[in-house]
Length: 209
Ligand SMILES: O=C(O)c1ccccc1NCC(=O)[C@H](O)[C@H](O)COP(=O)(O)O
Image 1 (cartoon, rainbow, N blue to C red):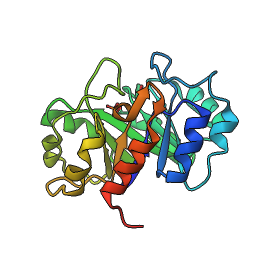
Image 2: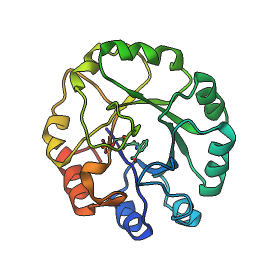
Image 3: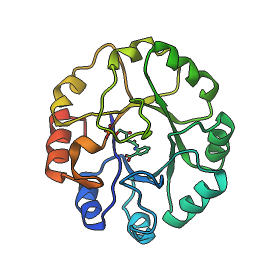
Image 4: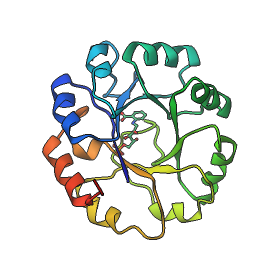
């Protein structure tokens, strides 16, 4: 199972997280988020993050030009889209060589239909909780909704995953996420992660080395 830690904001905190080798580390490029990084986090701190951690920029309804400018500046590997971005934009970014994650916010099973036009245009879907903030709320949605997912695009489970969820995640049987995305439930304040809690959580997942 892949691990994505999202909403990193501080250089020292990033340096402490990197040795845990999450598969993806996420940075928020949405101005209304308390985790917004541009202008606060020097681009070199992100571009210097060791491989194979995938440096992931999270955007909400940004233009392709805005996304590419940040991707170039911060040397991003992956782009995560959390608004009403089109399948064409996803495909264009994928064609440029970025790993593309498209977020969908699930209220009920019918919301799953929105994923169909994005099949093939994304590397991963990311299923999250609906909110006016677009993400990072710490609220869970009903994971059972994903039992109705019939798509072929692998997906991340997201939304309010916390330290107490390791056992449940380890024993999932009716849904098969390719990865999980953690954020605000592992924070001391927005953008500042509790590294010890993340380490314990990853150990409890007992992932194959
Ligand atoms: O984290 C944010 O502040 C954020 C703001 C706007 C769009 C997306 C955002 N985060 C993206 C993520 O991938 C989060 O990890 C995801 O929404 C889950 O967050 P949480 O419920 O806090 O675990």
